[in-house]
Structure formats: C-alpha cells, structure tokens
Length: 350
Image (tube, rainbow, N blue to C red; front, side, top):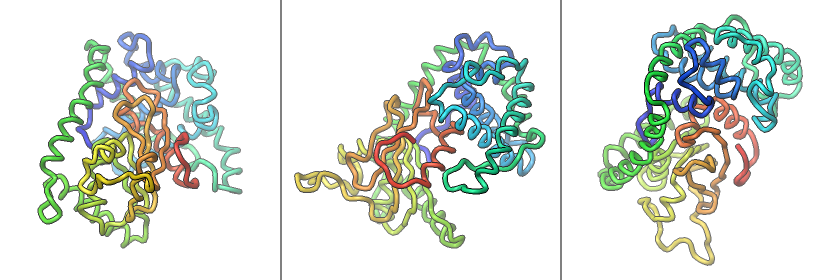
C-alpha cells in the first residue's frame, strides 16, 4: 500500500539515469543499461525490472520469469559485492568493460549469473537457511526481459529530449507536496468507527479480505505499506479494525513515528509517554513490525524510539530521491526477504 500517486516510468528512469550517469542526455538508445551498469550493476538490474514490470502486453507467466531473472541477478551482485559494500560498476565487475551494447550486456549478465550459480547451488542444497534463493539455472533470456530493453530504447527518446536535471528536481519536490495534501485530506475525512471515511473503508476492507485469504490458505498475513500508506494502515489496525491480526507489518519510508509524536492517530494517547512508560505499547494485533528507512530520505522516520516492538531497519537506496526508490529496487525486496528470516533487531542495516 502506498500513500501517493505513482510517478511515471519515464520519471523513475530519469531519476536513476541522473543518479548513475554524468551526462545521461548523451547516452545512446542502445546503451542505457550498459552505461548504467558501468556505474552500478544493481541499478541496471533495477531498470530492467522497472521496464519489464510495466509491460502490460506480455504473455501470461512472463512476469514470473522477469522476477526470477532480476532476483537471480541481484543475488549474484549481492554475493560478489557484499550487498554493495565492496564496490560496484565496471571498476568492480571487469567484464562490464567488454560489452558493446544492451543486448550484449543482458547475454553476458545471464552467462555470469549462470556460472556463479553452479557452485552456489550445491552449497545451497546442503544448507539453505542463510542463502539467497537461486530460482533455478538460467536458460534463454525471458521474453519480458528482451521486451524491457526495447521499451527502454523507446523511453530514452523522451528522457533525452527534455531538461533532465530540472525535470528530476521537480519530480523530487512533488512527493513532499503531495504528502502534505494527503495528510490533510485523510485527517479531515477519516471518519469514525461507526462511519469510516472512504479511504479508511477501502484500506480496511482490503486488509480484511487479505486476512480471510491468508486464513483460508493457511498462510501468514504480510502487509507492506509505503509512505502515507503506512500511516493509514497503522490508523486502521489500531483504531478502526483492531480485530484484524497481521503476522508481519512492513512500513517503508513512513511517518508513523512522527504522527504518533504529534498525536495524529485516532488511537494516540496524549498521556504517553510517561517517566514509567517511555514508549507507546506494541500493536497487540501485529506479531512483528519492521520499519524500513533510508537515512537520506527526508520523509522517513524511525518508529523504534516511539513504539514498543517496532524494529527499525536501515536501507540505503543510493538514489538522489530516496523516498521513491525503495520499492523499485530489486535489492530492497531480496534483502527484505533475507532479513525477515532473521531474529529481531534494532536499527541495523536491512
């Protein structure tokens, strides 16, 4: 669940290129991925995921192949770079200096990942408790990956023919203004338990439906909420629908801690904190709560210092506008899945 309108794919690509390249307007249509990878291989993988995810005309099952390809490539990048701490780009992956264009890049990436997986799979088979999921060996490039390259080439014309730096600056400013509008609109129209507002009603019904499906399938209920969406989900679970039990709540780039300190939630108790009770009690209907933030994200706040049971995790997006970069990063999803299997922790890297 997100709290703001989605930015266009063109804007997201413009942001990644502006962060990755010195002169993005000079990048040729057949070298978007190549040029990006030479600065950051992980950002190039993210671009493939973004462009492929937006391909609504692809055949059924193609999305799963795209996800598998990007997940395997991310695992390869993470293992070699220790999640980016050792280095990235052409200075670290020497083979990036040999590729000629984006088609060559994808073929070589597929080959590198496959060669890396061969010995890794044997180790994973012996003990998969602390390993990246391999998703199987590589075959031909998935059709949706190939189509993603074609889509990037078409979008490159738009990115190159506008004032990129100014456009990215405007793109970065819009979410902050939208958030303020969302906050005011939500608070004045959230209603009551007896007569909930339209936003509360929509989110509450979606959570209830997801809870029913999870119960029927015997699966845990996992809720991921970004930005203002995290504030709304918290409000719903603590006041409007306290009967909904969540196994794992993941808030990403949210202001839940700030909202509670300002006592903006319907369940907020102005008498807390006290000298005897320094934090707000843990959510009784949430088994585990992970709150993810990038230190450079001006719209993300810690929850651990405010709430009992909240685990603050740090994720560095590496992007100029961090607030919109969490959920578009393959590395974020891979590392979140890895972290969920770990024991509780407090304010540690994701």
